[in-house]
Length: 172
Image (cartoon, rainbow, N blue to C red):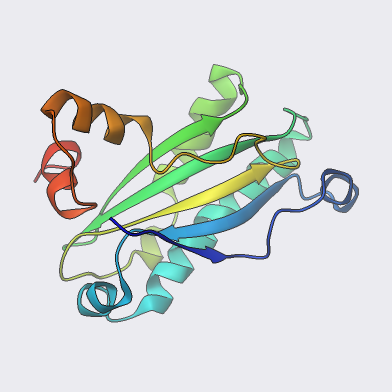
């Protein structure tokens, strides 16, 4: 598996993020497939970009309105997309803890967002958003959500993201 990470403006300095009022930032977008496969399965890359921008906007609005500092940490939002505009999100906190009630509302908002900009795909597509709270996590981001790694451990084999992995974590 080869991963590519596209910069989305880079990680902000903690002090400039706080000063600008933008505590939640998109760091990088991780694409799990090579361009050749993405071009086949995702004819309009702008649709995926719009969906990712919508998820980022939700994070900025939600955490911006809370006005609460949870420290410097990350949020990994992995996105699975299947034909028929079926979407699945896996969200994880990286190097920090957000109170369960705050986290639950955030995840619910993400899951309900972007219904009018869902990408149209001809085969499974996966990406991940590396989002930063404050200066972001000190340890970096994992390759994917823990549930993906757990599925591979349980199956006792490696999966290709998204094709064989989705058979287990995002079945039809």
